[in-house]
Image (tube, rainbow, N blue to C red):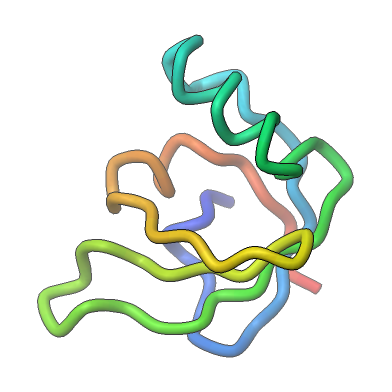
Length: 75
C-alpha cells in the first residue's frame, strides 16, 4: 500500500522509499523518514494535494506523487 492511501489520523510504518527519485529519497532520509519509521497523516489539502505528515518530530508536506511512491503498512 502507498502512503497516499492512508486515512487522516492513521499511522503507517514505512516499508520502502525505493520508488522515489534518488534526490527525494536522500532528502526524506536526512529528515528521519527511513524504512521501519512511523508516520502519521495529519491532513490533506482540499483537493488532496499536498499531504501533511508527522514523523520523527517534524511536520512535512509531501506531494501526492511523492506519497504514492512511498510504500507503507497501515498500523
